[in-house]
Length: 211
Image (cartoon, rainbow, N blue to C red; front, side, top):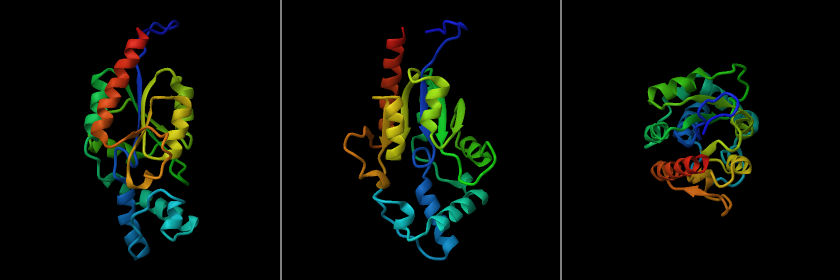
């Protein structure tokens, strides 16, 4: 399918979240906070309530620790999840445009997070665009249009809801310990290997409809 105005080929879009999807963000941050606060932080949060409350932290303490985490360059050493490289690579192999999405770091004034780009480079995760926004899927819909998006993967139920509102039947929640209490209507995927299979099916379905 080509653009009526410019004649360029229009390709499907795949949107992949970083923290909690491509990378082991929560465990990595917890280990950092153990050292930062000088005590072992509680484990086993299932997504009920606010994480900082579960950790017995005030919002100010939680934000302080997250800011220190980022300013210390800890994002660069976040463990990558098994299948992250393959997922992004497979999307490109099937002709999709890959958008890496993340929320804007709290209290950061720079427009681009260099540690995030470095993490992606180190782990050989290919992408076409990197999107920072508190309402990232609203912004994605504004930039590329709702129709182009074939697959969205996130780990936060509230972000899934935002994505589903703009890309219905194409948005998925990667299951983790912190989202097991998500509403039953949420479209769930067990791991990145299953996500790769569903993503491929969605891309092929998009191509079929676009012909």
